[in-house]
Length: 96
Image (cartoon, rainbow, N blue to C red):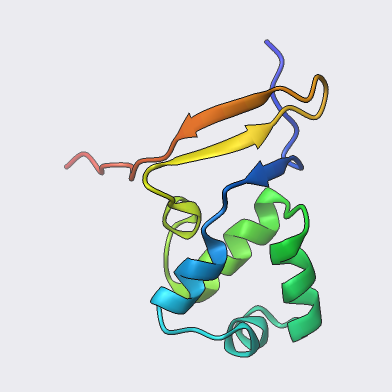
């Protein structure tokens, strides 16, 4: 089975809106992540790796799903064929 590499282009990200909705600024988030504000801007506007998405989410105390939430669906582009693939994003429930 082939898996998409962790580094892929993610479209329709709601990162900017999530940062704002959670009361964060780029400067505050960059400081919490230990990077510069221009570096964070580059990450958000570019092609963030899963590790960078997780670092942003962890710094804000949310999940990657919450960071990317956009009406429950995001679209990624396959780095091999360029096909857009819709992905449903939903919180993971914890079994008790």
